[in-house]
Image (cartoon, rainbow, N blue to C red):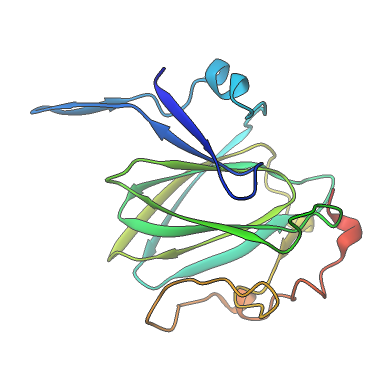
Length: 185
């Protein structure tokens, strides 16, 4: 099997570890195989790929899309190193307000599957970071929502010793108590 699927502390979030075949020429790996992903609990169709580039200290997030335009994501770090965070914002979930944080890097080649109903964000830990991620739904500007990255009720341990660089939008996102829970399914 070219993948190892590891359920996280929030069971629906899955760390995917691909098998990497390397030699003196470089490496080869499968980054997605529908049949294996479906067999291992990631039974979702991906409809859009996104590629982002960030410099050290950039924190993007926490982002999600309102119902009916929610997006599941499969996130991979192509260059550099990040902490990737998924916050459960499903109002009826027993893990509502809890989060998962993993390190993704070009070295470990791991991917994080984040289901619909989670806010997603990351912080760039290396000088340059490039992410490629698959999304189950297409971007919908009218459904674009966010959650404050440093909400005290969630208390994410970003494990950084610097003030993150944020977009103006991300500086003023609502807290978990303030988001419209009717928009999340």
